[in-house]
Picture 1 (cartoon, helix red, strand yellow):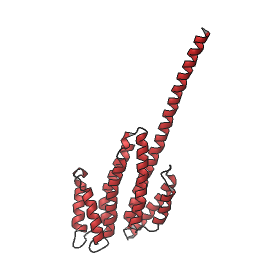
Picture 2 (cartoon, one colour):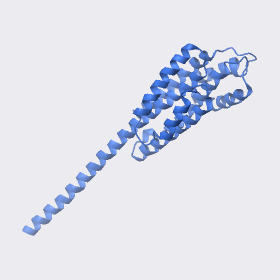
Picture 3 (tube, helix red, strand yellow):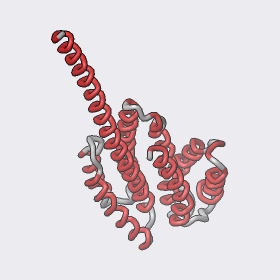
Picture 4 (tube, one colour):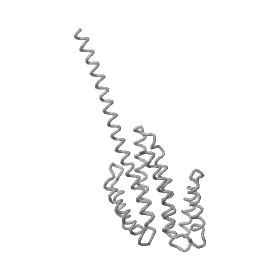
Length: 231
């Protein structure tokens, strides 16, 4: 009888131990997921503001300079707040090189590519942890970067009387990539407007600030949609 009771108690303890282990593992998984979601939200904000810094860097007026300084200050804080291994020292070091040279287009693009790689790592990790809603997130961010590059190039091209050939080629390529029927009428109208008044125009009819103002709302709207998908 005593042996039977002892065996029963032992079995109960084993079952309880297994249950507690599963509970602890689930809590740990949720804690990791929460941390990674927070890091992903921070990465998206870094992406947004580096793209803005690049767009404002192509404008020469005082208003853009003021906005650019505000954006740079926000980015300085974001690098400090961004938790996780994805916030690599190499990215922060590159930002310190980009910050005082806002007009330099390509270094911004290199930095953004590194941020996108970090977003991809977070997407894969969250998907592995059982968060299917993040699937395709990095792809959406890369499509967003096509718009961001278009904005940065358009702003810079608008400083000339006619669009420089190298910028024409890059913007035509980006417009082709963005010319998706599911992109919506707003995006199609934007591309048509840029082609007529900037890219193919005998004489550019848009100011840098106008280009920035035309494209930014579309970028912000799409980014908001990405954020909602992981909230």
